[in-house]
Image 1 (cartoon, one colour):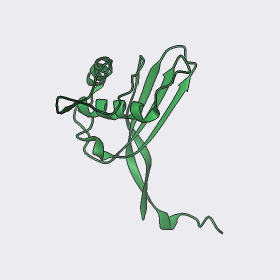
Image 2 (cartoon, one colour):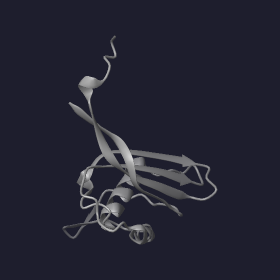
Image 3 (cartoon, helix red, strand yellow):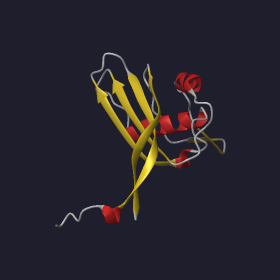
Image 4 (cartoon, helix red, strand yellow):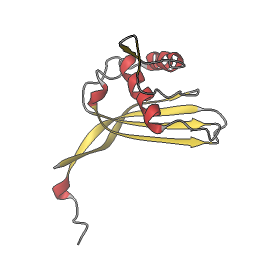
Length: 134
């Protein structure tokens, strides 16, 4: 069996602002919609940083969120904001390409920010790993 792990960094950037989480889609009048409140600035920044072509291979995404206060957003909603933003800005053809991810948040930063890394994926053969029982 082969396990994915983060490889070489393909791109990284630090969004200089507060990244707002995306929650689950809402439903109204029989249609699903995603409230994009405060997402426009993040997506605009991503588009200004966009590489020439979207990546089409398996990817590993890392994101580190810094907040001023302890009032923290759910990490899964922050992850959704990053992945949806990367897809909307054409960094990714589809966020299904993401094989693995690392997301972390902290409080006490003097300025809110989000640092995002896009990495290649390396696959390790589990048979080559040492037996933990030996």
